[in-house]
Amino acid sequence: MFFKRGFIFYKFFNIRLFFYLLIHKYDLLVSNDLDTLLPNFLVAKLKHLPLVYDSHEYFTGVPEIQNKPFVKWVWKTIEKSIFPRLKYVMTVSDPIASLYEKMYQIRPMVVRNLSKNADNITPYTRKEIGVPSDDLLIIIQGTGINIDKGAEELIESVNILDGITQMIVGSGDVVPQLKRQVTELKISHKVKFVSAVPWETLMKYTKSADIGMCIEKDTNLNYRYSLPNKLFDYIAAGIPVIASDLPETGKIIRENGFGIIIGSVTPEQLSKALKQVKDDPLMMAELRRNSIAASKKLNLEIDSDKVKELYNSVLSYYTNN
Image 1 (cartoon, rainbow, N blue to C red):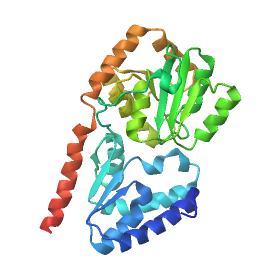
Image 2: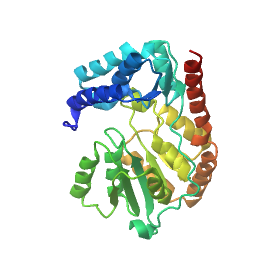
Image 3: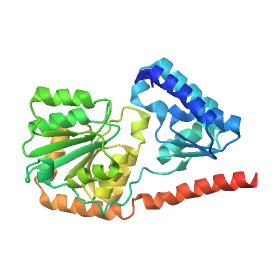
Image 4: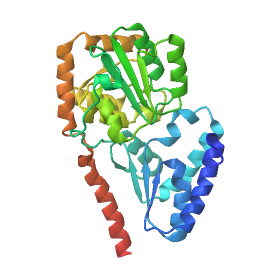
């Protein structure tokens, strides 16, 4: 790739992907998100191949394009042109499925971002990751540590509290800014950064934490109706969660009782919630028990049957036609 970011990157990537798909052989195409849909759709038509569209988010609602009218128009035009002509579609939550159904009269199959069972993964010790044994260890993780996901406010909160260490494990648009923020506040001893790692290693860090943070802001439809991967990683790790009050995230936490929901993502609200769990061991123990219980019913093995059902229907249709 000659271009590494921005709209020109996506344009060049789509051209490269089209020709790559065109000259290789396969039986099935799977488009992961809107930024790969156009070349997959064109090649599927040219080669008469089945296409599955796996919409990992409400792409045209992501915050990165809301203030870029032309870029948003391009992606929306691609979506409007292709989505009504799709036969096999998956997405990650019921509200996002309802949005697509309202716009295009096609309701995607809902397959949540559930995590695999992590019972056999051993967490890192505090010594291995260099954290004081009596600190409350919190984590925010994943490959989408981006704008409006609360990481900046969380660092501000950690700055004003004692006895708390924060891990930021993964990658995203705001990570360089977060590192500068930590340097300016002179709290590098309280905030540890780990680059993106394979899922099994990520879960070793996640299981070592006391609290998982899931604090997206309600600034766009994509975040409002999302069910982030990290939420289910926290459940798989059996740790409590502090989360913002978004419909789908809040619903799962309230139904299973494994976390605290804050009214707004501010340093003050975050500090209050962190202090609450740090000062109440009995509450922490109950939240952890509930998280472990939730991991037994909210794991990938459940929704994977839906995925098998979808691909079996693809196979059946193309075998009979």
